[in-house]
Image (tube, rainbow, N blue to C red):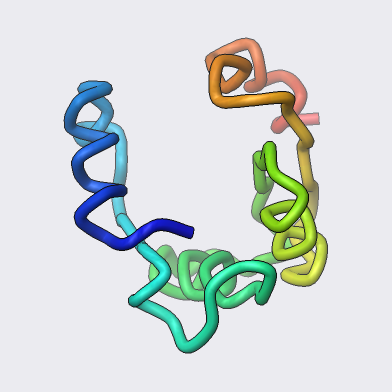
Length: 93
């Protein structure tokens, strides 16, 4: 739900940009969270049906957006420190 420059900066600082196919921020869609627009646009750009996507979220407004997008799975985490490869079995189940 951040502006694209912030998203890009965070991913670069975390050395994650090689693993990211697309980056979207709140100015890339008509409505930011709690609207589902970011998630729906991401799935569209990746050419993946939203029903086949898993969304990992930690904030109440993000969870509201995630559930509104109606993906295959929503995974609630307590914060970004919980987002790591240990989520892969949960996402794949």
